[in-house]
Length: 324
Image (tube, rainbow, N blue to C red; front, side, top):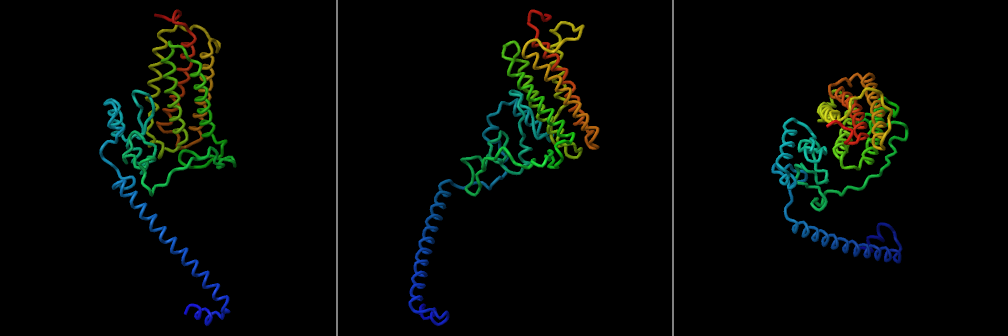
């Protein structure tokens, strides 16, 4: 009947119709095998999902603390609770000095990032090994994006500007300062200056946050960053006072140099002055940059240059020459 249908409607020669019918028959056999294979694959997938047991909805908020939060020391948990109560997205770990995202920051993001974060409110749903089968694995991103090949770059808000913009000049100088501080840290190896090394590492983290503030010259958005440059300044002032108490009085100008670490800290000091001037230029060119957060960041840089000057003297002075 099939051959007759072909012959009647398409006027296909009998021999050609037989060949066409054979092709259709083979295609039908392949389709049947594909259908059976699909059923077997679907059955296998269902079995694997059944073995894993019921899973919570993707990115469902879990009220109970996750396994990382349950293992936190009480004083760290308290620091996080205070930050969340204040609506902050970050806080400083009192033990390590590291900046940590709060539970509120992850809630604002709206999904588990898969990085096994300390305060993940989604029970680490997307962490490798715990991901649902429907969640795509993230791929490694390339270092280069080519988006800046035409001489523009993005602010923290997503706005694109020329790379010669005062904001990027300030950001580049802050980054340069951070790199020079890293070089200085690498030269401080003696045990008597472990405190200075630790403070400098904290300053590097402060500078990363300061860059975020400078990259957000918008009074309507910068207040949501959760950073506290005024507190950073208070920390520097305390460190300056402690070091200065043990140093001899300064009654003359000094030449930058001395020990290797002292010389590097003097370079950091001069670059810090340039970073401060660049931030002031942003304040003068941006109508929305005169916020308390921005002004506090400028003051932090001003105090940081003072700290670097005293730290250079401190690392260049032996304990015998310090005042008791």
